[in-house]
Amino acid sequence: MNEPAPPLLQLENVSRRLGGRAVVQALDLTLQRGQVLGLLGVNGAGKSTTLAMMAAAQQPDAGRVCIDGLDLAGHPQRARSHIGWLPERAPLWPDLNVNEHLDAAARLRGLRGADVRKRREALLERLGLQREARRLVGVLSQGQRQRVGLACALLHQPPLLVLDEPGNGLDPLQAAQLRELIRERAEAGCGVVLSTHLLPEVTAVCDRVAILHEGRLHHDAPLASGGNRVLLTLAEPVERHRIAGLEPVAAVEVLAGGRYQITLDPQRDAAALARAVVAAGWPLAGLQPAAGELEQAFLHIATQHASAAQADAA
Image 1 (cartoon, one colour):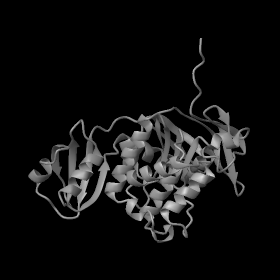
Image 2 (tube, rainbow, N blue to C red):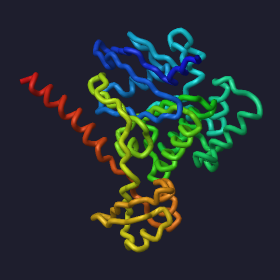
Image 3 (cartoon, rainbow, N blue to C red):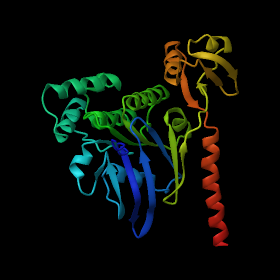
Image 4 (tube, rainbow, N blue to C red):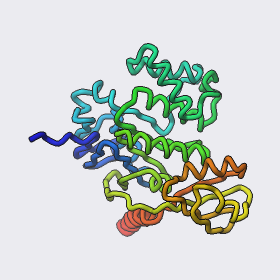
């Protein structure tokens, strides 16, 4: 009888201290192939440190991290070849143009030959960066630099993606396209860990959610579906019947301040709605799935422990 395949990512009793303070404590976490895990927590909860350990950018002080069955401590180079890592502020070379930057990143990954150019051009098209291909990275906008960093993480087609605030600087359409890309990678068998401050982003794209607080894991469970409702915000009001006429829209509820609660057609997603709004020429200001139960769980953990800390101080 064949043994089951190991998890794509496994953290076993992982701890890390920084500046004499325990930032991550006794953390156990797994990720399977094809799964998208949302990692949440208030500022200082230990999210970025946890992601850096997952990506082999930092070593744990205790415990171990395994990538596809490989212990990072024992096989660091082989394990890193399985990882695509996008930190919150992607480390980019400002004096290279985008093409040069991606070629250099490919060489660092050991990629050579005509295949590099094919991958580079495919990613530039997929991420909407063709027009920026010959521009210096240092003059790009924050959203454009973020997409260059994402392209670098995807170049070697890793089975594991670790993304820290990947939506930084993206406009609503680009954010919807990013969600679409993450789901594509998961459907192709890639595992994705996504950390963001935006709960609706997690609701839109993740299968599971883990919530850290003060370096400890307080919640790890499948994400209950929030249905197919999204909150659409337009910079200028549009008549209800015109929004209802968009192909991805099944129902519309008009709210105050140029906001509309949209029920999507079951076969369409938020990215399709964003494209339809832009094609109609309407000024898209925001597009957010409902957070619902996830928001309640997050706030409960954060406020519960804040109250306990105040009681201890008293």
